[in-house]
Length: 154
Image 1 (tube, rainbow, N blue to C red):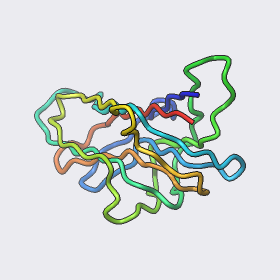
Image 2: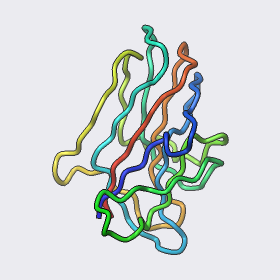
Image 3: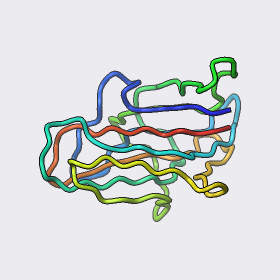
């Protein structure tokens, strides 16, 4: 079963700063402990176009921070609800495992980017409580908002 999660589902976007800010996080839920595989990622901004450098990263997370809960949207309306917990636009970052980045790209603010996994190269998070993947962004100069979207399967 496949699902979509983005930080617009939280109602507001994440303002950028020089330190990483989490846009979207997917974690295994206590009740279901479902393993997930991220297979498609889109990142960008929705602010006024300018030439600012930005960095996007997906790292492993082991403990939840404070963020707005979002419900991953099923891509097939007849499927069950996601067993994965989604959250967006963290106000307090979760616990990120040091040197655990599984995706990193630097972009100009004017560019959006899409990554699609080659078959068998999906980004996997385990069925361990609160373990997951955090899509984060930062910029030393851009203070507007960033957008992020992750598609995953269970």
